[in-house]
Image (cartoon, rainbow, N blue to C red; front, side, top):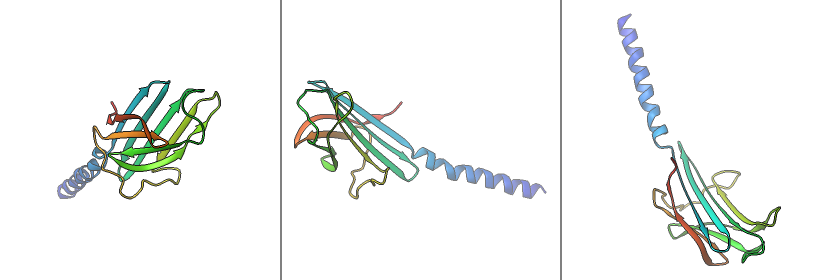
Length: 138
């Protein structure tokens, strides 16, 4: 009986040890930036187990330098990871949202390794408008 309890206890400890690395690998990094003309961006990179998610949002005030239809390109570590057309939303703001790793939009092959201080850049029509460096979410 004692051997059975020890074996069961060893399995429980082993099981707990094996599940620990999956939680240890979970991370969330974020950054944000603001610029002249009432523009802003934020970027987020998350891992949960083997899943990755990356998103970047850009917003510009109405009647500014940006308009619907312009191309927003997102660059991570000098690698283009995606692009979307800017849209006008209710209230007149101009927005661009790039979401990878969800909604049927996979993380592309060759997506750079992301860690603290990884630079995320937003370009509109080929011109850099904002950039920020990812930090751990508290």
